[in-house]
Image 1: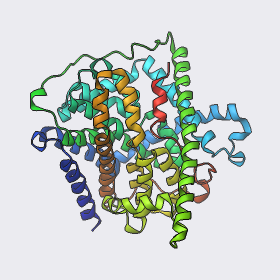
Image 2: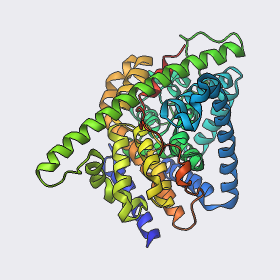
Image 3: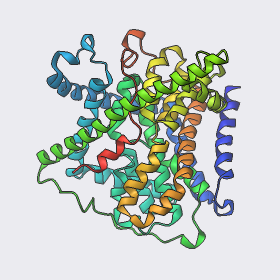
Length: 448
């Protein structure tokens, strides 16, 4: 029965995408079928094969080790305050320093040319498999490793000349993906045992975004074959580091701006959610529902969707509430809430929720893309505004497709991760939950 529900969920997501397509006759199976197979292949590799699990576990171990090095810097700055007994599991100490460390590390990798090589190689592979233009492929590949604010810089010289379909692909992949700089922060909220799913979702976001983008806004036949192929330079405005030390310093400054933005959004959104819950509880009390909350309302709306993704019905309201929180507010808030309640859910539900939440598809991302991509290509700003809500829907469908594929694979096998012991839950002990929207990602763009 679980297999049939998972297949029904996949079909339903594809049907929704086709329903909102700008021109169904232009949908090219040459693009959407390989994109779907690539996304499903990642899910099968990570969840359904022993060697795939071994690869992703090895990658997770590497990322977890990197988090350990970030903790060395945290311990040096905060001293005894970084210990669990002094509140070291609080969001400010556990998550924000990780962002600064990863931003500095990625800046070094860019200076050494490693990131450019990886992005170009992955972009070339995506192009050969899916048949989209190399510019779109490079943007999608960059989005796997950096966020929607930084990835447009990789294709900056070509942004102004992108067709509406190509621009929509760039926007959708940005909505569907996450920044590599904050994967560690997510892990600190929900536990490092879920890193395999976070990494898998990050890689699945690129083909998933391409799949939904090319269904909902396929290429005009007259635009096919128009493709610049030169590897673009990085930003023309920012000062290039003179050496590796300067690269590390610039990355740290970028990370500080991002961490400050994240912290500010955490504070604001936690308070706003508390306000909304207080108002709803007051209103609900008049009608005999004193426990009415923002999460409960959103959970009821998304409950059937999460059931189709493979979440058991009795847990689908909770997971639906998390996904609704992610879309309306941001994924940081949702991940913190997941960290608080994951001990009450099955590992399958936690895994599906992790895939569904791993993306920047929320309302604030529309403003981010207008500011970032629109700033790099002012002539595209009106088009970005027109396509914003549609890209949000496409990005959300991509995240749900990753969750549905994961749910289908998990119906045939056991989850990779195991639930952490209650005492070890990294965020359950956190007094201050939540974090910023993808908006945090914006700060990274303005870094020197």
